[in-house]
Image (cartoon, rainbow, N blue to C red; front, side, top):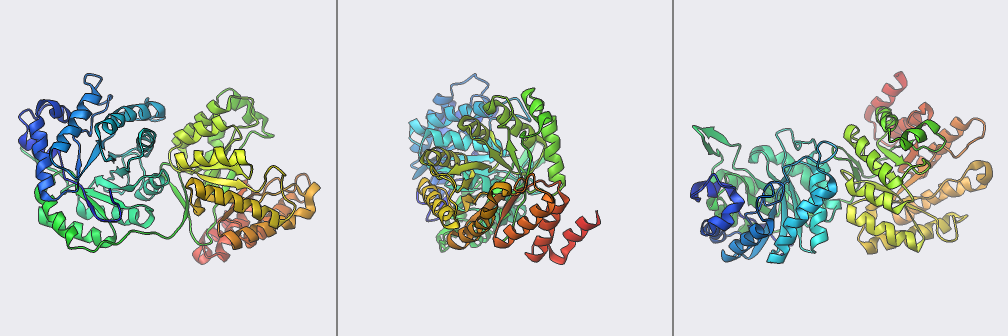
Length: 564
C-alpha cells in the first residue's frame, strides 16, 4: 500500500448487511460462513464504487466477543476469502475492541488482550491480508494491546483509529491529541478517527489529530448521528452532504478516507470523485517532544519546560519502602496526587531501593497510579525485566529512565523504547564513567543519539541527562554540568534533563543553593528539571522562569502561587 497517495477505504458493512442478509439476527461475522455471497456482494459494490481497500467482515471476530462458541481462524479465513473474491486492490483485516474492560478498570489483563488480538490477526496474516485496521476503539490501552499484537505478528501496515464522543474524548477519557501522540509513537502507519459523531462534530477532532500526527491521517465518519424511527435506524447525512465534509478534510490534510455507520457504496462513489479531483499533499508536522498518560499530554515545543516530581522513590524513605514491600500502594498514590496538585507536569516512579520483586512491584504501582493520576510517568529502573513489564502495560507514552553510552545499555534499552513507544532519558556516562568536561559528555550524547536514530527513534524522543554530581565532593564540576547542558542544546538541538534536589546535600543553605543552581540550569537551556514539587523555593523559581520564558502570559500563574 502506498501511503504517499490518497487511499480510499470502503463504507459500512453492518448497514449493508442489515438491508441484504437473510438472517439479520445472526452475528454479522458468522455471515462469512452462512451467507458468503451476501458478504461478497457488499464488497463488490464498494469495489465498483471505487474503494482502494476492502475491509473484512471481522470487526467482532475475536474469542471474547464470540464467547468461545466459534472458531476465530475459520471465520477470519472465510472473511478474507470473501473480500478477495470482490476483486479488491487491497484487503484490510478489520479488528474491533474485545468488548471487555482492561485492568485496572476491568478484569482483562493487558497480556490476555494481546493474546486475543494475536489470535485474530495471525489468522488474517495467514489468509493473505495486506494491512490491519484497528478501529472504533474507545480504550487507548486496549488499542496499544492491539497494535503490539499486530506488530508481533507481522510487518504489514497497521492503522489505528479511535472513536470520540461529542466532547472530543473517548468513552474512557482520552482526547484526540493524547491518542494521536501515543499511537504514532507505537509506529502505526496511519492514525485517526472513525464512527464517533457526525461529520460536522468530527471537524475539531480532525484538526487536533492533524496537528500532532506524524503519519498519514485516516477519517471514516458516520453519516450523521443515528435516528431510530419505529425500530428502524437511519442516518441524516446524505451522500452529497457527506462528500462536502470529505472535500473539506482533504483540504485540511487528510489523505486516507472512508465511511462508517450509515455510509453505502453511493457515498464511496462520490468520495472517489472528490479524491480524483484533489491534489495530494503529504501531511507533515513540526517536530515536538511529548509524553502522555491515558488522559493527558505534556507537549514541549520551542523553549517550553516541564517539571518532574521526584517523590515516588523509596531511597531514604523507610515508610515508603515498607509500604511497597507489603504491596500497599496508598502512600505512593498519595504522593502522586500531592505532586500533581503542587504543579508537577510528570512523575518519576522508582522502586529500586525497596526490598521487593521489582518487575511485579513497579508494574503494579504504575497501574495503581495511572488509575487515579493523569500525569505522564517516567519509569526509572536498572532492572530490565521490571522496566519492560512496566512500559508494556503503561497507558500512554512513557519515558524510560534510563539508557547510557555503554553498548549493552544501548542495545537493550533502545529497542525496548521503540517497541513500546517510549521516550528515553540518556545519561552521559559510558564504560569510562562520567567525563570531567562538557566536551566529553557531549561526545557520549552524540553517540547515544546516533544509535537511537539507527534503532528508529526520533531526535525528539531522546532527552539528555548531563548528570549532576554532589557538590560536597565535586564542587568544581558544577560549572561543567551547566556548560554541558548549554553545549548539548546548542550542538544537538535536543531536550535536556537534570536532577536538582540532592546536589547540595548535606551542605548548609541547601534550599537556597538548589534554587540558584536551578535558575542557572534553566538559563543554560535545561528543559526538564527533576525536583521536589513540595519545595516552595524550587517551584517559585519555576514559576518566575515561566514568566521570563513567556510561558505565563501576564504572570497570572506566578501571582497565584505567590498569593497562596
